[in-house]
Amino acid sequence: MRVLIVLLSLSLALAACTKKSEEAPPTPSPDQAAAAPAKVPDAPPAPPPPAVKHHTCDKLVPQALRDKLLAGATITEKQSANAKSVNCKVSGGAVGGDVDMMFMCDDLMSSKEVIDETLKQFQQVKALKYEPLPGLGKAAVQAGDLQVVFWDDDTNCQVTLTGVMIKIKLLDVAKELVAAINPAAIQ
Image (cartoon, rainbow, N blue to C red; front, side, top):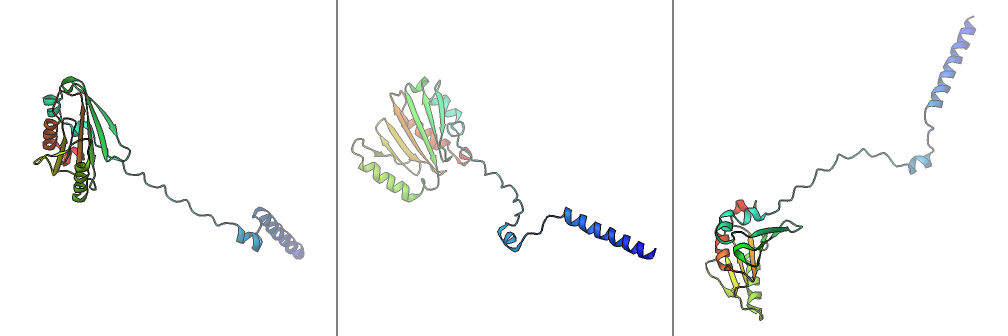
């Protein structure tokens, strides 16, 4: 009887080992083990990119200026893809025709080297005569009644005003803008 119990125990142990080996996946050969890539744990999701802050015409062209010189005009905003510039197209009302106000706010654009080089380029333009405008921002030039370009004192913005068939003076608008643009307006 003892022999029978031992044989039965051995049979059960052997059956358990056989069943366990059937459930386990086959052991890969050394060639298969080298070829199979190790499972890499999932990387945590990447954080979202920081939100791009665009400058807006509402902040850069204050209501007081709109009421004073641009009454009844409509403003259409066009953002650049890189968030460094915005074009505010002002049409109709007291303006008459169209005025494009291009605000480029970037540290590179407001560097002394870039300002000096840009002023030098304006002096070389033969089709339009650009005159310096002392006392307007860091630097400024005007081409008759067609264009005023200035670099703001308080910010890193270069502003270009271009008007066609307009009833207002761009220089008046530029003076109002240079007084109104501040760090809060471009944040």
